[in-house]
Amino acid sequence: MTPLEITGSLAIVGYGLGAIGPGIGVGLIFASVIQGTARQPEARGAMMGTAWIGFAVTEALAIIGIALAFVFAGQ
Amino acid sequence: MVALVPMETFEAPGVQSFDHAAEPIFAGIPWLTKFMLQAIVAVIVIVAFWVIMARKNKMVPSKSQFIGETAYFFVRNSIARDMIGHDFRKYLPLLIALFSFVLVNNLWGIFPLTLMPTAAHVSWAYGLAALVWVLYNGVGIAKHGPLGYIKHTVLPAGVPWYMWPIIIPLEFASNIIVRPVTLCLRLFANMFAGHLLVLVFVTGGEYLLLHSDSVINKVAGGASLIFSMAIFGLEIFVQCLQAFIFTVLVAVYISSAAAEEH
Image (cartoon, rainbow over all chains, first blue to last red; front, top):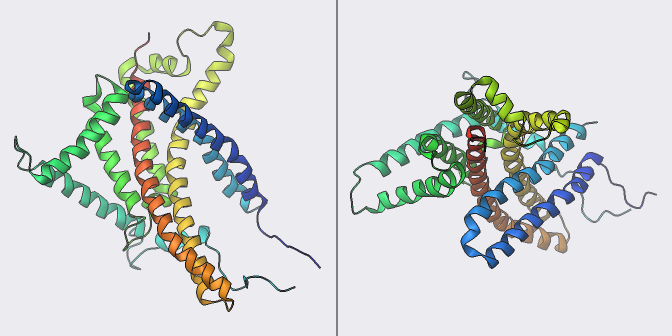
C-alpha cells in the first residue's frame, strides 16, 4: 500500500525551491527602502528608482525559474 | 485507502485553461481571438479616455479634466521625470501609451465580462517587449552612433582592461538579451500565474462545495469561494503594479541607453 502517492512534475517543486532566493532578495530590497525612508524621508524618490531596478533584476531569477519550470514540466 | 477528497473527477486548472481564449471567436476569421478582441477594445477605450479628458481644457479643471490630469501627471512626474531626467518630454507619449495599454489589458483579468488578462498569452508580452527592445536600442544608436552605442552598452566606463573579457560578455547578455526576455516574461508570468491562482480557488471551491458529500469539504469549498474575492483584490493590485513596473523599466532602459558618459 502506498500511504501517500504524489503525482506530477518535479519541475514545479524545483520552481518552488528556486523562488526562495528571489523572495528573500526582494524582501531585503524593500526592507532597506523602508529603513532609508524612515531615516531620510526626502530621499524616497531617489531610493525608489534604484529599488525598482533592483527589484526587477532580482525578480528576473524567479521569472526565469517559472519559464524553465514550464519548459521541463513535460519531461 | 479512503481518500479525503475524491479527486478523480476534478480537472485541475493548468496551461489548457487558457486555450479557449486563443481560439477564433468566429470560424471564418482566424485572427480574431478573445485576446485580439480585448486588445482592440482596449485601444478604443484608451483613445476615447484620453480624447475625452483632453477635450475642452480650462484653467479651472472640470471633473473629467481633473481625472485625466491626475493620470497624466502620475506617468509624467513619477515615471518619466524621475527615471529619464531633464530630457523626458520626447518619450512621454510613448510611456503614456504603453502604460495605458498594459494597464487596461491587465485589468481585463478582473473585468467580469472578460476575466482574462491579455498578457496571459505570451505572444502579447513578446510583442510589447520586442517593440521596447527596438526602441531603446534605436534611441542609443541615434544618440551615440552604432559603434559608440555598442561600446556604451557592453563596456561601462572606468573598467580596467584586464576585466574586459569578463565584463563585455556579461554586459552584452544583460543589456541586449536578458532585458527584453525578462521584460516580457515578467508581465506574462504575473498575469498567467494570477489568472491560474483565481482559477484554482474558484474551480476547486466549486468542486468541493458541489461534488463532495462530506460537510467539512463543503465548508472548505465555500470558504475557498469567499476567499477568491480576496484573491481578486490581490490581482487588482498586481495588475496595476505590473503596468507601473513595465513602464518604469522601459523608462530606465531608455535613459540608460541615452545616458552620457561621465
